[in-house]
Image (cartoon, rainbow, N blue to C red; front, side):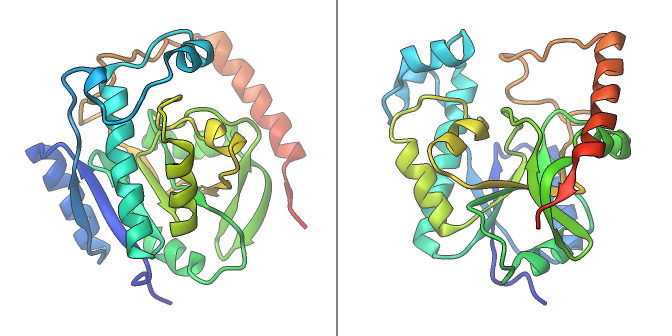
Amino acid sequence: MSTEQFGVYVLTMRDETRIASIERQLSQLGLAFEYIDATVLQNIEHADLPIDRNAIQGRYGRMLAKGEVSCFVSHRRIWQQVVDSGKPSVIFEDDALVENELPQFLARLDGASISFDVVLLGHSKKDHRHKKLYHFLEPLKRWKPLGAFKLGRGFKTWPSGAVGYVVTPVGAAKLLAVSNTISSVLDDWPYFESAGVMVQEVRPLLVWEDFINIESSLEGERQTPARSKLYFIARLVRGCIRHLQSKKDG
């Protein structure tokens, strides 16, 4: 089994700390990759795509920050490269923490009989130090086995980040077709699913955002709300129920 069938791209802001981290990790895993410089817009009106303000306001109750629009435009450029290359590809953001099992998963995914356009390898703003708890809280609803991994979809979908994901050339073409106008944040996978993009997730997750050691380029503009202890208890109960409901997709 081999990972050579996959292109690997790292979206980067050329920060020295981030570069050193991602280069060390991917080198240790034997993954050759190409850097893609992120687009940095001074104003959202500078984007080379029309922005549907009404759709965005209706979906999120606010307008996108310039960092979010920059992120959208940056990933979209990589989707075009995936189409042009004709190879399924792995896309990382440069603050990714990559699990050692990723090459094993990619080798399993290569040639697998499971249909997908996108496979989410990780979720943003989740603490990798508590990965076992997070996997318990967020199991897959219906899944198929892939060696030691599970591939399926979560009980509930939400904008979950783009710190690491696999996309096929067909999937990248679908994403491009849906995004000729910016109507969502880049990581709103439910939005893309509603437009016909087949999104899957892997368990255990294989990529995490290193938000503990590396400051997010978006978080100053887009704050994550604090969660109460009561909310955590509710999630724990929900996780128990979901595990009882989770089942293999036959």
